[in-house]
Length: 459
Image (tube, rainbow, N blue to C red; front, side, top):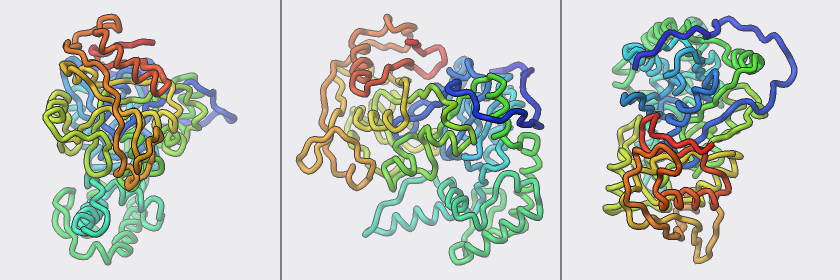
């Protein structure tokens, strides 16, 4: 895909010229309602056309958003999905943890494919993932795997996300993106990290980073300063930039990573990520008050998937799972790992709708279910012999539930070419209505394939 150079990208220098509350309700947030991989990238790409800026508010390079434009697939990890539109701001907010080498690699890859990245801005207050965070992540996962009497490994992507967020909260040695432009400050922070982490850093090495072999302070700092200089033209105070953007009357699309059921507070703890994946993360992750968000689009698959460890009540281990996995290309964008697959769990989806205040749904991968005679949908759980329709956001409890299913007629037709609601088979529409009735929120967008054009809008 070749884009045209944008003409409306504001400069890095910006000033907050007005005070008082921002206008309410003009912005949109996109959040995932399951365990990630719901197709948020496509939803953001579609909505970006009607917004002036796209701002990512959480997560790191552990997230992977895939967008297909004119048959060409783009896999984005740190760069917001709106980058595929010229003349729009694509903002990495302060709530994101940034691997500077990964985002530089991603930017260069996009440029090589003709994508205009002049609208990309990175918060100077976003925290940085450094090689020792990845080493710590891997060590913790390996230790949990060996600890047979305790919990299983969390199933992280080993990208250093959790340890980077932990350093952010502990404050003592965390590095922020702005520090990459301040040599003395950066070295001081890294020295503190090496000192504080010495008991566990001893003997660690990494082959996945800018400084292979045993980690040393000076080479790591030099490498970080080098990539900092590369990113410097994009680094700014994104909170001020977003406030200026909204005060001009422009609309911002807030892009969430991961999924609500992986939220550190509201997900299936402890098998969660390290950030706030729900819509309340917009405020902390960008500095824009949540009152500015008037529309919350919840993205959900037509079935359930999960990567890594943790409960998945409707998980399948048969030919049906293999069929869905292959048809849906259910392999992680970031890790390549095959995703676990199950029937649609509407108990979980309804919980996510509730905690996010979702105003509309985007249903993805409906086409994957074409050809099944019948479809199962989980509408309640049985816990210790008692039926309950509430979702318990606690992994040990959720591990013990038994899903209670309702059977819905399947549809035999392939629907990838459908261009309107009326062109969908009646049984496919029945499935969509079943979802709407159960969760109490309308399905506004139905995706019947990976391409932009394979989308049915109902609003």
